Length: 500
Image (cartoon, rainbow, N blue to C red; front, top):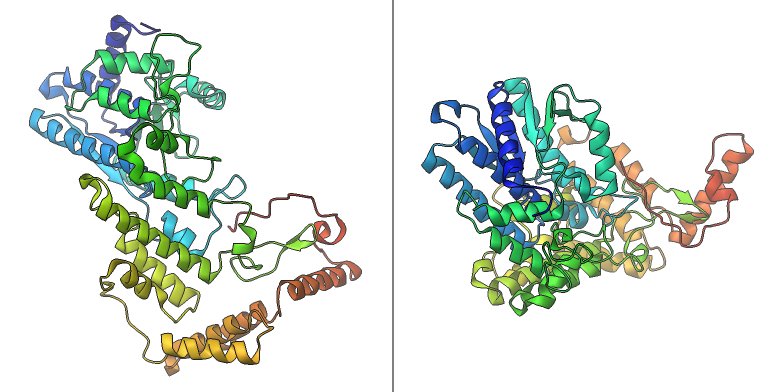
C-alpha cells in the first residue's frame, strides 16, 4: 500500500478541514488534469464535503490554466472534468467554483511565434511559460488578493517529483509563517499549502484507485491515459519499484520545444491507433522546433531591427515573413484535416483561435508594415470561408496589387539588395498611415528608423558594418562588443538571447 494508509488519509482530511475552518481566507487549487492535481482536488473535495453544510462558507476556486496549446486529448479531459466539478458542486451545495484561465490574446504561443516571429522557445530563450501560464494565474490571484487581502493556494506538488522540486519546497518550509503554509516567493499575501508534499507516485495512484472520484469522473480512465502516454503502454503500480512508473509521464503543451521530443504524445500515437490523428501535430512541432535549420529561417537583425554580434557573427532575430506565412498555412491545414477526418469529438478542435488570427493580422500589417495583408487570403485559401474581422479598417491606398508591383520593381532595380523591398514597403506604409495632417507627427523619425534598419545590402554587408563600428569604438576608447570583435567564434554556439 505504499506510504499512505486509510488512517493517514483520514488524518490529512482532518488537517484540511481544520485549516479550512481556521480563517476566512479564500482557497485556490491549481488543477492541470494530471494525477497529482487530481489527487489534491479530490482530497480537498472529500474533506470539505464531510463538513456540515453551515461550515462550508469559504469559496474554493479550482483553477486550470489553458495555454491554448495543450495536448488536445488532455485539454478535452480537463474541459469536461471542470464541467463535471461545477455541476456536482452546484447539485450538492459545495463551495467549489471551477475557473479556466487563458493567456491574453496578445500573449499566446501562435501570436508570438507566427505573429511577432519569436524564435521557438529553448533553454536560453524561454518566453512561453511566463506568458502562457504565469501571467494568467498571477493576474487572477492578484485580483483575489486585492478583494480579500490574502489567499491560500493549494497545489499538488510533491518532493519526490524531482530533486529540484524537493530543494525548493524544503527551502520554503523554513520560511513558513503558519503551520503547513509556505510563502509564495513571487506574490505577497499568497500562502501555499501542499497536502501531497511527502507522497510518492505510487501513493498518488493508490489514493486515486482506492477512493472514488467525488465529481463523477473515472480515475481509472485517468490511469489509462497515463498508461497510454508511456513507451511500453504499462503502468506497473506497486508491482516492482525498479520498473518505470506511469507517474513519470508528463502532459503539457503539444508545441513544447523545451524537450528534445514529446515522448508522451509519441507514446499515445504508438500505443493507440485511434490517436494517429495527432501525428500531424507531432510532425509540425518537430518542423518548427528544428534547431539545425533555425538560423536560416530568421532575419539577421534583432526584434527591434538593431544589429548585435557575438563571436564574429550577427545574432539572428525574428522569423522571416515567408516562414511565418508558411507556418500559418500549415497550422490551418492541420486544423482542417483534424476537423474533417479526426474523431467526432474533435470536429470542432481549434488549434488557433479567431482572436489570435486577428491579433496576428494586426501585427503583420500595423507593426511589420506588411500591407499585402496576407492572413485573410491564407485563411480563405485553406478553410474556404471568408475571414471575419469586424473591427478591421482596411487601407484605402495600398493593398496586395500595389505590394506585388513594388516587389517586382525592387527585384528588377535592386536585385542584389536583399533589404530593398523591406525598406520600400515599410516607408510606403508609414507614409500611407500618416495621410492626415494630424498623423504626421513623428513620421520623419519613423522613416529614419526604418532606413537605419534596412540600408544593408545583405548579412555580409551588415556584419562588416557592425565590425567597423566596433573597431571605431575600440580605437576611440568607448565601450564595444569585445566578444564579437576579439574572441574566436565558439563552435556550435547558441545565438539566442531573451529579447526582453
